[in-house]
Image (cartoon, rainbow, N blue to C red):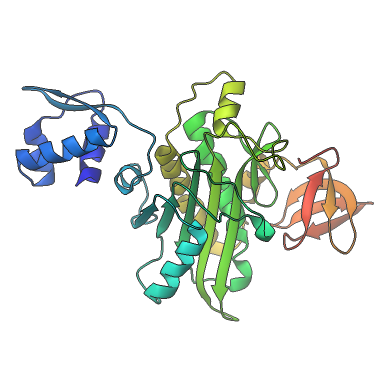
Length: 334
């Protein structure tokens, strides 16, 4: 019910909504409306209440409650089941538990969100710093009817959604550092981890996890030189620093649903490749490919339809798959 009240108040944010209108919209009594408004105020929402005029939403706290997140959704099916937790070991781990415990039905499109992770992970088992109240940590649980060999491209699809969502909410200009990082001014803001359970020709489930640094102002020593946050980058550009993590989540999910549905039509990036190239910070730059079989340098030329990075080396174009390979700029992280 609180979700519906927030949705109605947001739709009429510049005017008052009468108690009678809310009663009719929600099918509850005035007393019930007053009770839910009181609960929202106690949670930190500033709601003006004027006799004979009604209620108006004045300001919203930066919280990630189930009601706040749900009221920010603009999707057809993604995230209509929101699982919010104050603290989790990892949103990816919880999403996998949901899939395994629920069997084969009912959880496609579920989104798991945590205010804090105690065991957040990145690519290759690296830890992801996830202190309370600072970042946006969430995982999308999917069950697509696709070839398991095509699942890794969903990392790139989520990267595109993160770029668009961040740009829409903050006015910043993020870019993708292939394959799974989002950077602003050369520093990492977002990490993406895609994990899959599958048979040889059948996907049991796919979990696409995302960590976004939002309010952090300090980072662990080992990553301080290459990590940043939306708050810090907005300060650097002189932009308004107020960021709602729930609004940001809603924007990223909106774009992920759109890009995901385009991806499903072909199970590759053929329809998204051109747009992806415009977001790719590596494109046209000399990069160092850190391949366990041997490092080499070349010029990044973009991606192919399968999301492999095309690197021109000694007049020959090599296709680089993510796997155990990393790509760095020759003078640093990007």
